[in-house]
Image (tube, rainbow, N blue to C red; front, side):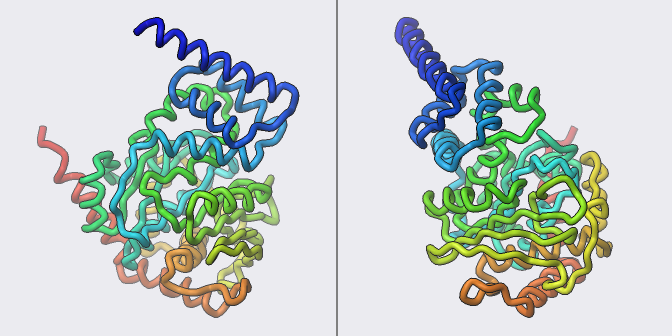
Length: 370
């Protein structure tokens, strides 16, 4: 048995060394080669130092769509899936890595969608390159982060929303955690996260930190069977690069996959009837700060945070099939404004807050008395 294990370890070491040699020569990896490389990482056969070298070599040379596809395939094969959810379940998730440190937008959008009866399987993680990831803020809100598939299906039936914490469903990712934390920079893993939803959703609004990755993200999801995807990147007029959500601070570039066709277009906040606001207007903080802001939002607070959430939620309503925003690949501003109004009603009538309160109550009931 030990001889077999040693042979496997030696093979993994040789495979990864060959991959590093290719990258050192600035050569790209095929999807199969990338899948093998990420596979041995996920299997714990590579040291943190070599993982960091691998990720930086990819970043410096520039990651390719095939490398992204290989990474996603390797991780999907190793995840703890949550099957048998409604076919129309959606995800709203950002890559992170934009270094703006905003309030949690996609997490808030999940409550809005669930309040409108749309099943949401929100994939997220703790902060890696930001102050407060989705799991951090949900923990501060008292929302349980369940791992058991049966319990998650029950939660979906009761509340139309489940939150899938990456460590519960991607235990193999722990092998890359130290290297990612040490680097403190966005890497290919940021892009992989939204593409490996454990619920196997086929409808997604994906926030991407760089416009150059919009089309590759859509293409990869399309090759893996997604039905409708909007990959979005906000382009603030004042800032230091793209932001991984639809923004009020400038145009948002969108790459959309619908009915097997790809579309490209931009969304300006005024098309949704919303006012311009700089990114600083939704500046976030630690988990407690962001949780308080989200709670206040669901209780009726107005401002740039609310408007940002409404813009993202309206587009997510289209991705979910509730409304139609595109006609022959062109965005309909009137329909977008109606989508914003529908999302706003779920905040104003308390329905979105009721989803949060229901999840909190379920979490409290599940905790044993001390």
